[in-house]
Image (tube, rainbow, N blue to C red):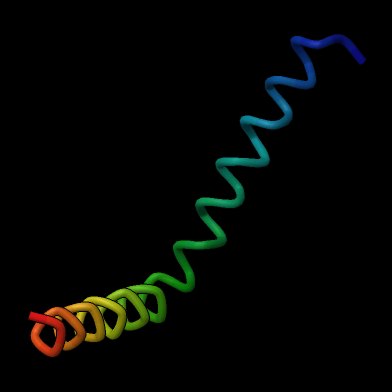
Length: 47
């Protein structure tokens, strides 16, 4: 397997990874929102 083929393969894997993550997007947005809220609450408490 040449280096060029490997590169294309990893690109394809990355695209598949992004697509599979897309299915979890709603959950990820929820987690990101909770993290955002937690950071805001911590900032209010600290300052």
